[in-house]
Length: 439
Image 1 (cartoon, one colour):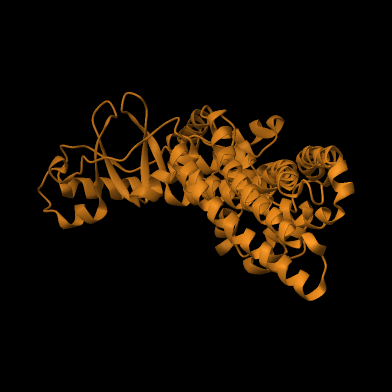
Image 2 (image 1 turned 180 degrees about the vertical axis):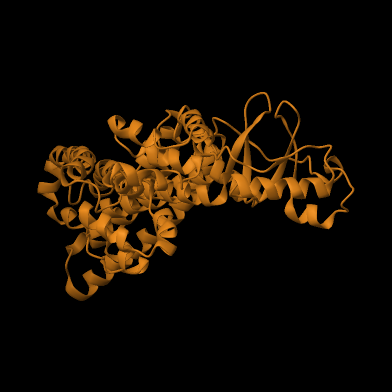
């Protein structure tokens, strides 16, 4: 006889889950009280659900596979190795398997790939009382999410939508066509998940219907589905802005070689870019040799340009992601960032000039040409910050125009670009101001 397992709480297992081995996860899951095992299973992400199901004995898998809604089952299938997907599909009932296979035909990041094909539907000629009774039966049978009831004709074209509140407030003998709303917010099957998330944000809906080009309703995407999408997209963007490829997996679940590979590529590109800084300094070697004091301000100059560029790129990347700024707005952004860069450069330039003059007065650090050195640094800061701001704000637009992710215009990448050009600006200004004195 198999020894009785000691039961543990779902919270205890959830806390320990990331560090448990596969077998320990299975043993722990089987120890969770049956009354809460379903909720615990549904709280796992798709990869964890896939791994857990495949670790169970074949006879135990069916219960958990059939607990998943079709759209959730698709997520689990997509997180499963190709050669093991049939093992999960064969555990589904015929109707669910057909729904899942239909959803797998869509791109993972499109509305069609996110939608649930099971939704509450009613006919326009039903009375309100008939619709409520019909919805009650649908909920008992297979529909889990009932935010709205969608009004379809005989060819499954979407005619309108009615909320449960509208149904309960309306007289029981009124027809659905009389109480439904025809001011519809819909998503095409191929709408990208980022655009879909903006649609939810703009309209504040709990669910959005997905329709094909003929207006036939295919399913719904709910707000809880899109929350996961927003978190995923934000995570990827943050990782890209940090100067690396998106990990596409939780930190502790990605293998060490894969993590190194994700980080090494951009780091190598940035390193090679920074080597141009050494080339720029070599080009101005003569000026540096004659006025060594100029080297004291190189870190100040290039870091200010890099910081201003990073600020601008981060602001524009986020504005593009939220739909606050579009490609056609690039000229408005140029004008705004030109003014911002000029103002910020003047602020830093004045601070730099005052600092040099104070240090010269107190410590006699820079010699008889301290004022000209201060003017050189001040003008250079204005130029470098202005250039950093403009290049940082325009690079995301360029990448979007080329079809790339604007988040690839990462802060380290912008900083590297501005470092090289900042040195050119600095020594060009120095040559103009200090020729005949230090140079």
